Image (cartoon, rainbow, N blue to C red):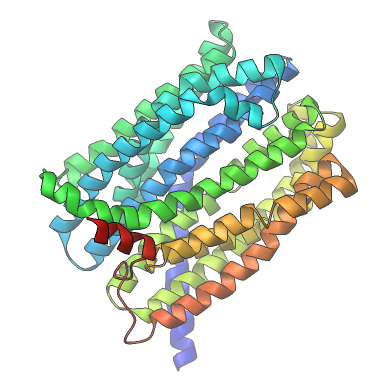
Length: 463
């Protein structure tokens, strides 16, 4: 009887997780599809240095975007917890303070990155004209980071309310704006790389506007908290934001190392890696959306004290991940030839595309496990666990594996090593999540975010 109930529960949650992930991924897929088309248009210009510049710039943009993802995770976790406990006004106020602090922090971060673009690009291994093109491209896009953060936080608020559809439309509209402007600016006006950058900025404006409108019209808008409320909420925001942002920054740091390692094999290898970098989020947008979708489900069930649904949500997310990865890996394998033809890829560029569209796509399952585990940690009041796991994966799980892979197989070994490190840390994250959920099931377990890290306790004592 208990087993039948567990299966029924997992089935219901699987359907819920599937719907939230698929609807959330449609918007993400629109944005990633435009990034993919950007890369295709740049490749059509027939200049290898342009494609390589986009590859180097992509690593930096991933770095800045990860800051926005961390702030969105923070807002979603705080709002979902309040909504799960029936505290609608508290959720509205926390959404407001999180949004304002997110804009402030992202503006400061954007200024820091913008002032250090040349050094950051050089760290990736870019040289000469390719480096100059990458810096020029980034100098246009990076100042718009606060707009992207507004859109991401707006989407997180909508998902916390269970409104994945409107969150989806924000990114779809942004993707459409980018898709329309790309050919006009790149080819029509002959702006090439500059046109691609301007189209991306316009898309970020659209995402921010479309994400905020339904919050204002359907969910009571935002509160008007005073200075005391902003000061009060700063500590819980930092308690989640600091580890969440650190967690997200681990990925671009690891990718930056991979980019530098690939730079040793020339611009054709970097261009191939850039194409794979655009294919990856497009192919696995559903998995990226899954982590954002399952987080609020876990947070609400933990806030409501429903431990059975908590475990069921995690199991349903893993089942969904496995089925989706298997299907996409098979599709990519069948399309590897046309994809290489589309980019007119040959030599090492073609080899890297074929490698990704084969075994490496299937191994992405373990990255999906890590995404789900991080969402669980963030919503179970253990955000620093996701920080440690992500940094472990993108340091210990990247550097030695990439070094060994490059030594054994050259450029292809760089991607093989990166994937093998993901397997190890995916398994570790899975086991650790089970342990954390067992602890959460105990009657004396603290509620989410009651447990403070030593860093946050020190911060509180100094105040």
